[in-house]
Length: 147
Image 1 (cartoon, rainbow, N blue to C red):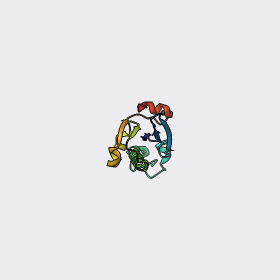
Image 2: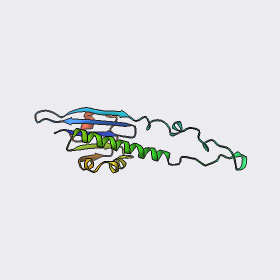
Image 3: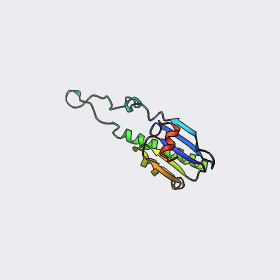
């Protein structure tokens, strides 16, 4: 029976297909992988010099103005990335038709991904690990899911 393992964090997405025949050891094959450009780098590098960012004026000695500051920009970008990841997971699980799948997502975004999954896809989730396994080898990933 084939199973899908998906390992994600804010910057990386990896989907593996695990095939196990009766007389063979399980085989793992990378079926999807990408790095998110949006998740890399500093927030200040992604923003332009918009109104209020470096403004001077008002107040004593030309104190910086405070309008237009992106207070929750990082949180919003995290939510947007989690939605995109969930969308990709929905697509892969439907396309592969696997009856069960596993998820390894960093603690920071795990619950956000789960909240954005379609009900049918979420129902097939067999094991969920709150760890970032995107930077480890295939055989190590399989150990985390008892293969």
